[in-house]
Image (spheres, helix red, strand yellow):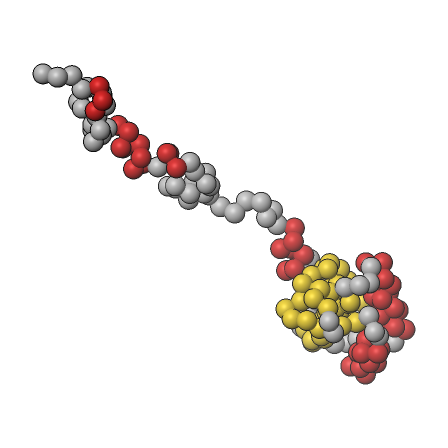
Length: 161
């Protein structure tokens, strides 16, 4: 039998349990046609690229099916009639990979580490104004200010010579 992968997007207003029930209905229909469901993954509630039927998010489910084309046509017809299904897409594949899909593999990656921090003033985020090199250099060589003489006295404190 030919192999297919079907991604179903459910409405965001339904719960995850309702999505599981919807998937169970599809699986039961596939199995009643004498076909097999070889893979079933719930990808979670994800943002849509654009609004579909006033929804900005949807529950994504991937199904790996081993089914005849006529039976697949009936499954797709039932998905079109279901009000909880926003979109679905079925493609024919050469083989169904038993490993987790790329979406689930990316979800499980550690997203906390994003590489080494760049050197320079960005190394610790926002820095104080006085910590910059140019201000440290000014403090090291402080010439007399306009209102001070070489001994650090202000104009009002000048001694007469």
